[in-house]
Image 1 (tube, helix red, strand yellow):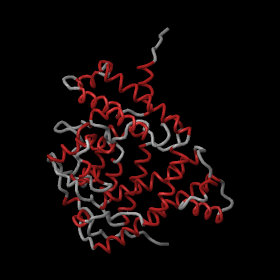
Image 2 (cartoon, helix red, strand yellow; image 1 turned 90 degrees about the horizontal axis):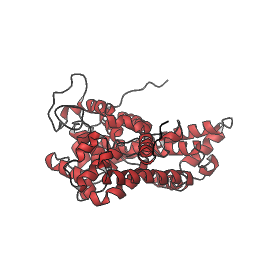
Image 3 (cartoon, one colour; image 1 turned 180 degrees about the horizontal axis):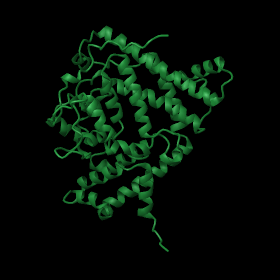
Image 4 (cartoon, helix red, strand yellow; image 1 turned 45 degrees about the horizontal axis):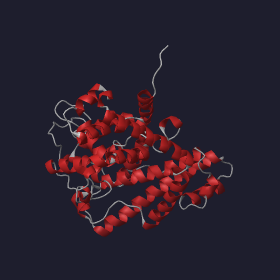
Length: 393
């Protein structure tokens, strides 16, 4: 039996003892590293709890077994921690960024984001990545001495630029909040983020591609046979069927998805190792100084994933059942946004107070924050209360 041996710490891993600290100085924890403390703050945040009833693909009320933003975030965190540990990186930091990455998503997934962007276009726009940043730096209010969660520099950097440098986005109206914050607290937005943040980004790709295959099959949007010709998942399905002809479709599905996760993780680790050797990185600063990502899929894997995503886009994300839900979701958010802008006095009192003394653009941002924080279920119920007259016997 092979006994697990922890890997040697990579020279380019982030060191929590050398963290650049927090915007607002605090005494360090006696029991946790700064990155572990960040993780705990995210888990206890109100925005994190709300992810339990926010859409991944299916609206939260459509079934108990489909992924939500919360279960997706947990899966991303698990994959990120596993990869970071195996690569000798700081697992707490990778897990923290993974847990935080979807905090800014509005209800109803991409349909909700598209509708809020449309509604907010005259007022600076909406971007869920920027909203995530605003959640952890401004909208969460749990501490007496500052707004937000006062996360470490490394966690904030990873939240903002886990997909790469973002300095080119700072002129976009929707990125004004990050541009303003960066002027007071420089996050180095022109470079790549830490290896841990890059791991979190790839873990997101691994998690959502695999669970969308799983959820799409379970929902009956497509069948196993239709996936047999799709790269990556097809060969794995055929292998499982050949090795275990006794398995029913459910177990074939689960086994193939499990193997696909493993194949994608192995590919990331191999490609990252190759890039680390060829680039000669020896520190976290070296990772940030590269002109390309350190953590990545191989070209072959990236090509296979593009074909898998194309299949999912055609057969799942644009399926008529999903389109109907998206259409309903857009109408719900559009109705509420228009009403709250025209009649802010129907907002809950704590939100109405925030709109007072603000111009039209400022009011729109408050309305957007209120709607973006809703769960799917709450948005549906709030819309019903606002637009359907109640009758009492």
